[in-house]
Amino acid sequence: MHGSIFSLLKRYVQTQYDHSTWVRLVEAAGLTSADFDHKSVYPDQHMYALVGKAAEMTGIPAQELHEKFGEYLVPDLMYMYQRLIRPEWKTLDMLEHTENTMHRQVRLDHAENAPPVLHVTRLSKDELVIDYVSPRRMGALAVGIVRGIAAYYDEADQMEVVPTTSEEGERVSIRVRRRPVR
Image 1: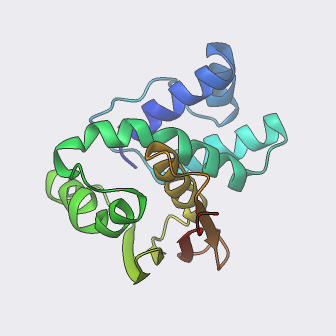
Image 2: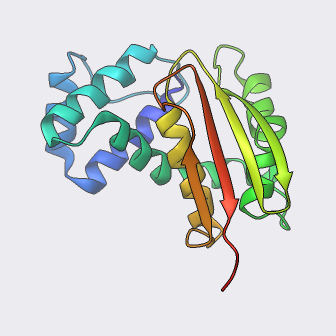
C-alpha cells in the first residue's frame, strides 16, 4: 500500500487522538517506525496490523474504523487528483469516473501500487452500483470514501450508501442512490 495512505492514517490518528496514541499504535502493531515515506510502498499487512490494533485500543470495530478513515481521506484525495476532476461533476459523476481517471493515473504513475478495481454501473441519473474488487479486502474503506465524496460535494444528506455484500470480501457491491428531494 502506498506510503501516502499511511501518512494520512498517521495524521488521522493524531487528529482524532494525539501523537502519543500514534506511537503506541505503531508499537502495538509491531512496526519499527512511526513514520512512513509518502513515496514508498509498504506491505498491506502494515495497514491490517495498525487498524487491528486500533480496533483493540478503541473498542471500535475495524470495519467502522476503515469507514471513518475512508471519509477522512477524501479532501486529500480530491486535492491530489484535482487536475483530473471536472468542475461540473458531483458525487455520482465522481464515483462513475474514478476508475478511468484517478485509478488509471495511479496505475500509470505507480506500477507497483494496485488500487482496487471499480466496476461502476449507472442505473439511472440518481443511482449507481460500484463493484469493488481487491484482494486487500478493504471494502469498508471504499464505503467510507463514497460517503466522504458525498460530503465533499455537500450531498451527504441526499445520498444513501449501502453495501449490499459483506464489506470484508474481495468483491464488495455498494449501491449509491440520491434520495428524492422533499
